[in-house]
Every structure is written in C-alpha cells, then in structure tokens.
Image (cartoon, rainbow, N blue to C red; front, side, top):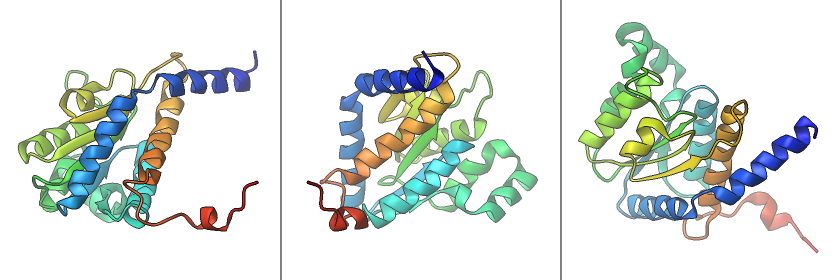
Length: 201
C-alpha cells in the first residue's frame, strides 16, 4: 500500500468514527450563542492557528457571528509574549476582550493542552479563564483531547489511527468539522458564491 492509499484509508476510518452527537452539541451551543448576541473566539497554535483564522472568516461571513482569533493580530500577540510570557497570551487576550458568559471559546488543537506535561500551556490558561467567566467551550482536537476535552461543553476528538499521522489528520479534520458546522442550514446565513453559480447535473 502506498502512503497515498494509506492516508486516504486512515481519513476514511476517522470520518466513520467521528462522534456526531458532539458535532450536534457544538451546533446547538453556537445557535444559542448567536441568538443571545454572544461572541465566538477561536484559539489554536501552529497549523491550528491558521485554521482559526480561516474559521473566523467563515463564521463571520457565512454564519453571521461576531468572531475573532488572537493570532490574527501578530503585533499584540508578540507584545504579550515578549512582556508577559507565552503561556498567558491567550488568557490575557480573552481578558482584554472582556470574555463573558454568553460568549464561546473554540479550541483547535492536536493535543488539547496538558497541565501535567506543560504542553500548549497558553490553551490551558485560556480554558481556565473561560471556565471562570462561564463562557461556553467547544473544540476539535486530536488524540485523547487533553485539557480541552476535560473542560469543554462539547468536543469532537479526531481519533488517532496511526502514531505517525496524528497531527495531519487532527488539523485536517478541524477544517472538515468547522466547514460542516458553518454550512449546516441552521447555522448558515449567507450562501457560498460557487454554490449559487454551480449547475450540477
């Protein structure tokens, strides 16, 4: 089996094992947040940070949410990192954004953060702050979900099927899940351009 065949086979296995109940829970939370005028904050690092930026675009434009990601403002992010340390950057940003009950924090992460291993500590501090403020927490994470899965109100875990492809699948399926959610008829408020032009026979 070639690597291409293996990768697609693994993706199929993951797709068939995603917990759809958790996806529906995320949709229900987001519907409630939007109806109450709450805001949506996306947090992630590395490739997941790039996914956060893309998701902000989709949820603002297509879903009609007020949505933000701290990694879209590199000046503030690097200033906070330089002056305060990396581990508190997201929590401090959420505090500056006046995170409150009625808002929602969405985590995109491979491991979900770990207090014990001090991995993705900035997510851990942000999750603790979000919990203190009684904001909703949702996430799409890999492996066992880490700290995100423990605290989240709804969390989709991308199950690992091979030890050497955990990261690419976790980050790929973050995109699959958020695109599913933002295109779900209850969430979608503006149709996509190409769908309006397409004539599929």
